[in-house]
Length: 363
Image 1 (cartoon, rainbow, N blue to C red):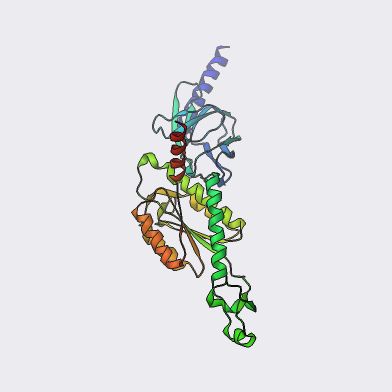
Image 2: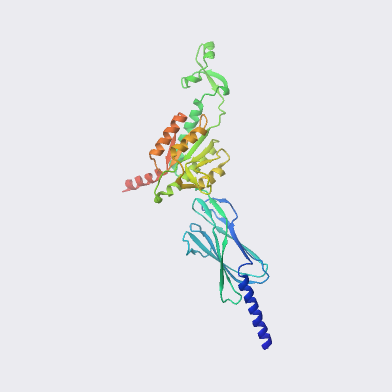
């Protein structure tokens, strides 16, 4: 009996030495989203993977998995002690030798942006449970959260007028290549559409009829001006407005390009830029809007000039900005001169002004 007890003690000592020496060497841990992009408030799966590559069991493993503090997920979560911008989600494991375990949890992020999964802190107990060994596990996972749609009625009304003006301008544009015939002048047609030769032959004014196959196009500029930190939410609102504008234009088969003077999160070499717009390419525009930062990389007039250089004949322009300030007025002036028609302007604080007016009326 004593020999058997001594043998057990020696075995426990050997296992204890091995567990301390190996520590977390045979533990592999990773986690990250199974999707690259998601809608706000829509659950997306996050996969947590842990493996024991050794032959000895891991009797106790604790993983403190880090998530952005704006995310919501089932289970326990606390503010991280080292960085309060993250939440820690705890996982505990017992792993046999060569065992691999995978768990999937649904996570929700209600906020627009690009969110990283920074890693986890692993704590392994020794064989006898007398001490703990700690190690950090890195993760390169990222999730892109689209801006929500802006559903206020005043935006729908404004877009209805804007699209109507675009269609009217298309009718006024001269494109002799697309002439399909002539008809009598009614007094409402522009003078440049009069066909003078046919008019002389018929003895009455005749105008050209056009086949309006020219694609309508619109350049939307998300203008970021200097704002206070407490107004950063206006940039999120601008992104939501531009999303709804882009989807409305796409539904009308209008080609879209989106520009911004802001830095784009995750694109280190991008000082602003444009999303490859166009009917059927809304996904690229949505990711573009998700990455718009609160800091500007160049002035609003400069990005307006760039948009004007890229825009062709008949391109309409729409500026979306947090506030109406001098830079915005200058950009609108540049685009007015370029397009020959009034540039559309939507400010994100319009909604705030409307609510304040309602409150005053109620009092």
